[in-house]
Length: 167
Image (cartoon, rainbow, N blue to C red; front, top):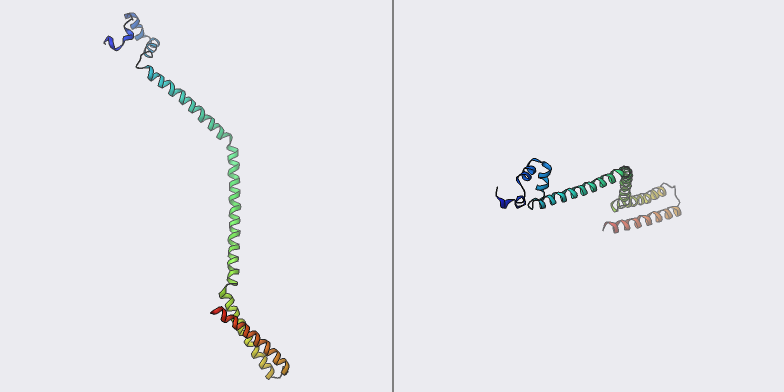
């Protein structure tokens, strides 16, 4: 060992050096006074303090979360209830949308055009029935003219509307 490596030992006697080597506490006291070790020891102490602060913060957060366990469970139940209500409302909405589609089909242009075609045919049939009833003597001339005019007027109105729709 060279003297320049450990200048702190220059002023010590052999007995003092022997005591440092044999006594763990004395060695630790000497060791931590070395210039090379002081910064490392300071970093270790700082790390311990920081770790203690982190552990304390973590424990606080953990305790805080645990204290909210009932609140969290309550919120989970409320969310589940709201999801159930949402599912029921969605089912009702789907049913209403289906019914709406059925009604729209009922009043759609194709359906209405077909209905109007049938009404035109019915009006034409009514005209034929009036004529047949007159020929069979079931209607007087005045009754026939009145019924025939009404049914032909209705026929022509419906037929005109049908032609406008199919253009």
